Image (cartoon, rainbow, N blue to C red; front, side, top):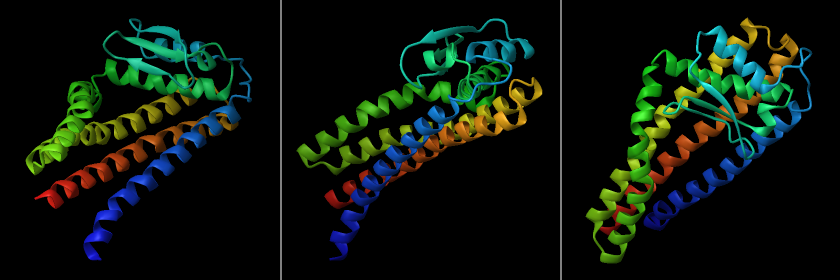
Length: 229
């Protein structure tokens, strides 16, 4: 009975984290949609806000470009491009300004060589290898009944955990910088800024959940390897 319970708990936790991830994703979309209805008094769009923030920080080599998809906003440090979704790039809303400012936070991190951002950039290949190689090794280990291969797969997967561990403070810092710049440059009123903070806080929670979920998955893989011995 004890072994059965110990075996099941990791699957239960994985399921719980999956559900929590879906809930958090829904909250982010709900918050974004809620404050996308609020128009800044100054009529600022996401692209305009991004341009103001970059210029105020002396950043002139970053391109601001529209991209397709919902909530697909990101900063590409390799190409130095600030990619803003259509709902952010050309829309005048509290959500658009907050999200654009967050991505500018990453551009500022890059310009200042923020150590954790540089580390995350270096970990991208490790994460990519782990996301594919870990499952290949684990499936091979299960098929061949070799616990060593499962352990190797778990080791590869730990690269994803490390990437998520570094990503969390990077995202939190980007939001902190974003809110500070929005306030300093008066891009939103105090009341509007509260809405923008809620949008970024909800988005930040998804990175925390991703970290916890990856840790649970790693523990499940290690437990699987231990049971195969």
